[in-house]
Image (cartoon, rainbow, N blue to C red; front, side):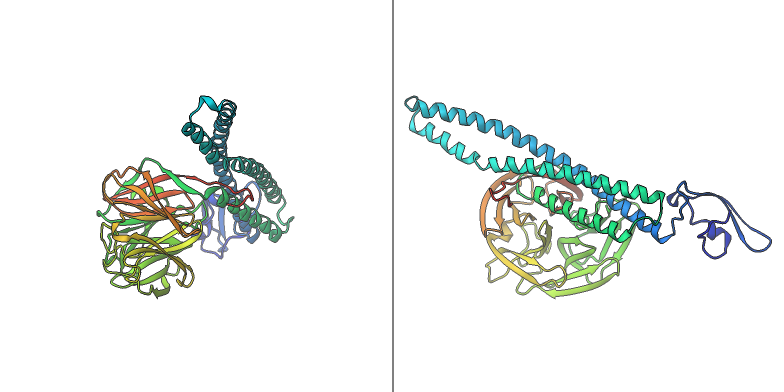
Length: 450
């Protein structure tokens, strides 16, 4: 059998590209007397060639639909869990309403203080009514999205049987629309205020006491590459692991050698590029992994560096990049801000500062910090017994003191970052790479906006 889309003759290499991943099963290869290459193979069931342009486009579209379907399942599970919580809260609210009615009818049996407490509790629970209504609407929307995914999947299967019977551009556009709607839905349901942090989950114990590790917050769900940067200063070696499992086993990685050494551990990978602080300077760098080149670097004006304004653990942690649902941020401080934490929204293309906020919180008193949904959360220590102690809301330029505990299992945190794609905190804790799940709660306004 001489398959129709084999490359020019050299028999062994010619037959090698065909394997289980392409649908072909190759058994033997030989050269005929006239010089032609002969391959013994089983043709795919569909009778299509994987190297055909349309087949490749179809496979890519099917992978996109599969990713959407998986994300829908995660979203469905999360919505169901949150809806159960709201339903339980609704029952509590109804019970309190009954108590309030009884109290209103027989005020003499209550003193003024207890009556006022009941009223205050009811007032506090009133915002949950629009939350419940919104969750019901979101559930209907998710059902509709799932049906649309099924329709696209059905179309793809039909095309697989009759190649060329569908307009690929139109099909691709439908998938893009679905992805956009899914992203918007997940953004809406995912954002909110931090209310809790899970117990730590240790992924691996490796490297020195200080370092950082991360995944790309903008990568599709099928991309599970892990980046690993051991040490907090003068380092230039970044390891890129193919999957999380490869990172756990320490296998299948490539090495990137940065043109400039880094300072601190506040690095992030965002949309295929590494953002980091250049050693002994307030210059921030955007390094593109695929091209292995620096795309842009810029001085962060007046920002302290070289342990001028680090976190309490030191380690040249003056400038800390972060990514949340709203994009790229830089956390640092200046002499003009008297050492208080400054939060700046950063343009990921140019590294220009778009807007800044002075939080009023002294950076040297902070153990670590991270951004979720435009809110900066600060820990009061990097040692055992630490808790999330302070929150600054950029949307209202206001702050509050919090009391959210989390278990600092290895007693020395030198990196703490939120990943909005996975909704977890990544931590480097005394030579251990650890993650925490987070619980977010959001109150939806009567207008339906977050």
